[in-house]
Amino acid sequence: EDQVTQSPEALRLQEGESSSLNCSYTVSGLRGLFWYRQDPGKGPEFLFTLYSAGEEKEKERLKATLTKKESFLHITAPKPEDSATYLCAVQAADSGYALNFGKGTSLLVTP
Amino acid sequence: DAGVTQSPTHLIKTRGQQVTLRCSPISGHKSVSWYQQVLGQGPQFIFQYYEKEERGRGNFPDRFSARQFPNYSSELNVNALLLGDSALYLCASKRTGESYEQYFGPGTRLTVT
Image 1 (cartoon, chains in turn green, orange):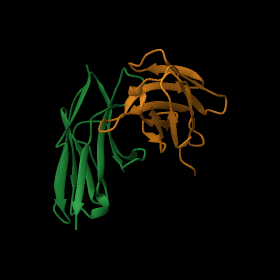
Image 2: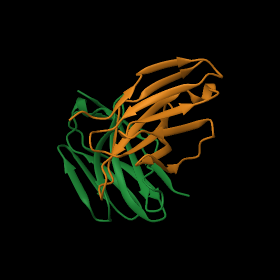
Image 3: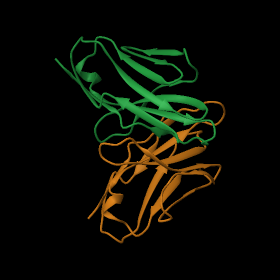
Image 4: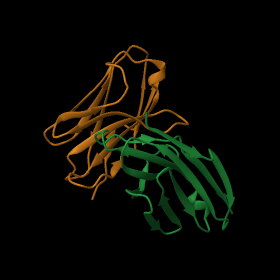
């Protein structure tokens, strides 16, 4: 059975303090791994798709990387506006287009 | 371009009632998926529709049903509501072809009392 585990559950950072969020996964045939950002009471906002081990994608202060067992979302010099829940999801090659999400990491960045 | 839209924004229903939620995909997107997100959890896949046909179904009871219309908009119906159906219901649309990204709407917050 496909599984996605995100850690830590919650993370508190000071503004400018870089860190990484982890997404461990088991899936029978990975089609893609997706990162989303979700603000309270809103729908998830698409950030990145990673397709194969070794791939990296960057957007502003965020950088996502992928290995065969896990993905990391690196946040460099975060700002308070980066506070949100970050969700990781995998899509298996035999799942149609269903996304299997982890529970997310709740990030709080304080000034 | 407008993103995925959903209506209503909020809804309060009583146990045993039925509810219909609506979704309009991004213009040009032909695939729509529905997800349920309970507080503190990640979204869970309910259905996927493409070209008006069901292409995938998650582990949800038959009380949940959906359909897609010729203009690619979609409805999610839930019958015989239970307290546990209280959640944020999300709709996502996807471009056809080799792109696999799904773009989510703002969701409908359903409260069952």
